[in-house]
Image (cartoon, rainbow, N blue to C red; front, top):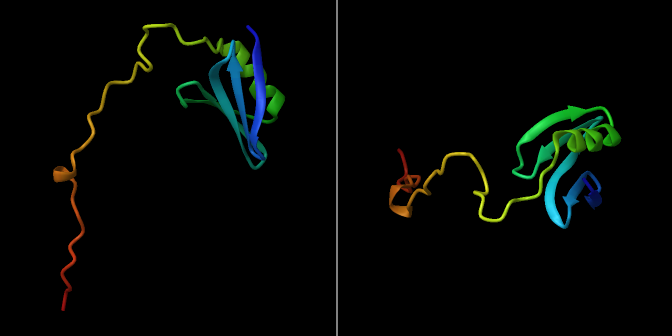
Length: 92
């Protein structure tokens, strides 16, 4: 697997494999938090190199054409009618 890393911000590193998004590492203090291509947290590591190595060990597969983007159940969006709006009435 050929993973390419690019620094997206001073505390974010993005991984791609074969030109497809594979995940990212966010630096949080002394911790390096690894996320997969679906932004699911995979773990926290003491260094950037340890987080990079972990993504390689997880496999970071490229998306398969025709496969669903996520295995998470679909959550329909709430319509504007169903959202609660704060009351604008003043209380005395």
